[in-house]
Length: 297
Image (cartoon, rainbow, N blue to C red; front, side, top):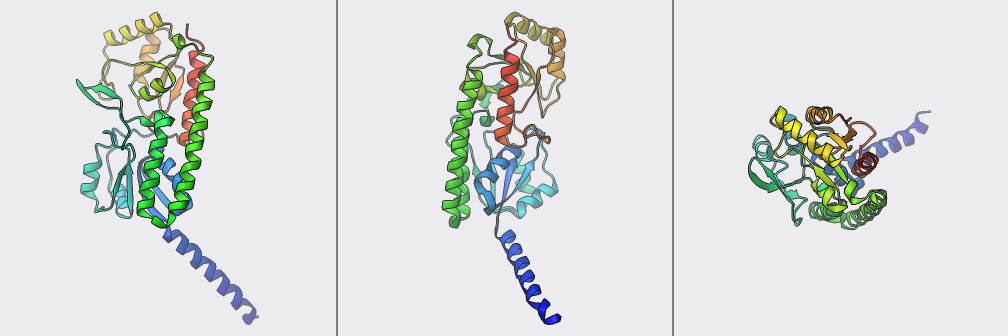
């Protein structure tokens, strides 16, 4: 009996060794936030092991690095970040980690739109609201992965091309969804200026408070002014965001005698099935925006 078991044991041990080797041979990569992590996974496929620092439904701007995040980075061979001021915590993370590897800024080469924050013009980091710009991001991810893993050049290039074609399809689909909405009715209210790239690409006007509300409360006068503006414009499309407190949106909607239309995703995926990938996130935003804007006067 024993002599018949030995070949099976040898085969099983060989298979386990092979699986362990395949796991160990994957390129360990860290992405700064959930949307970026998803796209890196799509380009990297089976050749990469992706860890994400700022997870789903978490705000990258208010994130604080932890020792566990530093440990993730210590075991990585590549760090991919958005740039454009989204990861202002990066110097602190590097200070508490021992990471000495390359850092790839995936927005390199993109000319950002400028927004006003605290009296200064700063780059808008939310480039993922425009799938056309995401094609540049995909090419930066591809190049960074090839530099870290030259043997995977053909593999990464093919997967990047396939994802780029999916982005082209996404843009075509979005234009078709928006086509029935006249430009004068493409108006949406959000609490933060996070959807400017989406507005510029698809001719949607986003109404936001005149200054950032992540770190302060709006006054009753400001709430009333915004509510009057929405009534004047006939805007029914009012959205909260998944990573921030909906209180500002709810107060403006209540003052305008309107209902909040739902939730948009700015710079984080969802923990639910609604937007667990970037492609799903974008489709969700377009669907709910179109539905709400049809009610605009």
